[in-house]
Image 1: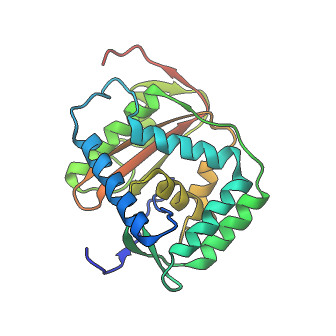
Image 2: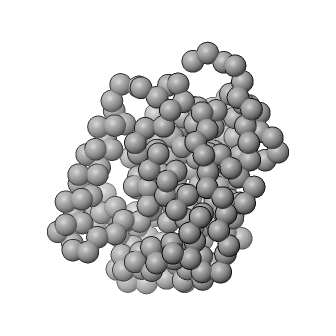
Length: 241
């Protein structure tokens, strides 16, 4: 996409993705290149996670989510560093790409204030049923270049989760498109640029959630997509994979 800013794409049922920090531009470029090469290798490798295990990139997203959930005040410093990625009031350089935001600094500053005032919430444990349901949606969206939470079979997030397990009370789904680093995904969820009510941020810091599943895969138009499914608890169904 060259130097043209990439419009920020978002979903409305809990999702997103961006943010990578380095101290020197040259080092940052090298790290980004190495990271994307490793990610591409992992995403094109033979499918070793059909049984519901998250790969290294997906586990990194879960770890980053837990860092933000359990230490929000400290994570505010991550967003303060993110402000240095802005080249002007609305354009941020994310994972080596220019991303056009809508609110710019204002949304980042508001997110920082939120993190400094919000209490910690419990860490999320990895869930096999939620990972499988997330992976189903990644494989549905990616090759077709689709976005959104409705599958080609008209399934909703709860429908896909129910294929593999039964949430105790609540569940949710987040989707990101484009930048694929764990930190970039979590930053975008928290900043929630141009989303009234900051629903994605609320989802990320939902205290009732205890488990999550993450799946990342290639996307026809946006390079990568990441789907995250959340729940309070999931009783897994006895389905052979």
